Length: 193
Image 1 (tube, rainbow, N blue to C red):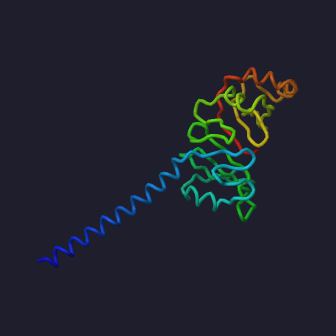
Image 2: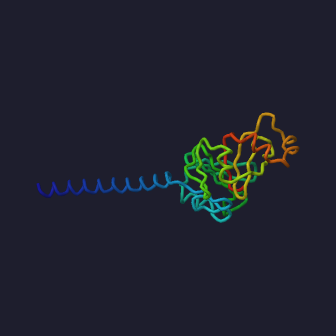
């Protein structure tokens, strides 16, 4: 009877040890996802470097469960929705080096190396406090307007009357856009683009 009891005890110990090991791995994975990340202007994010790190490096840090999206014929996006980060590389690149990183302020947990805390209510005025007066630029389809700094850009939704023509006419005076969009919410952040 003692041997049967010892065998059952041994099996229980193995079972609980296995559960403990799985729990430790699960906790370690969660720590990686909840850790505050730092955006380094013109460099990268969370230790991943633009023009040096590859999609394999990204997968080592964040796993392989991401949304895959092809942009036209040139670029591929690996979107980590829960983290609020997307990594881009060129489709023709067999090594898949990261060329561009986008951050969603609605989901991202972290800050810039200059101390700007990224959060869902981030506004142009918060960016200006840290970085000063931006240079303004628009996307080719005029759907986004960006406050640009060296190595980082902050995107807002343009006013409904915004056109390339009125941007071109007023672009010399960036303060017109700064004043108009001062309280506008940041929709997206890019390093660099």
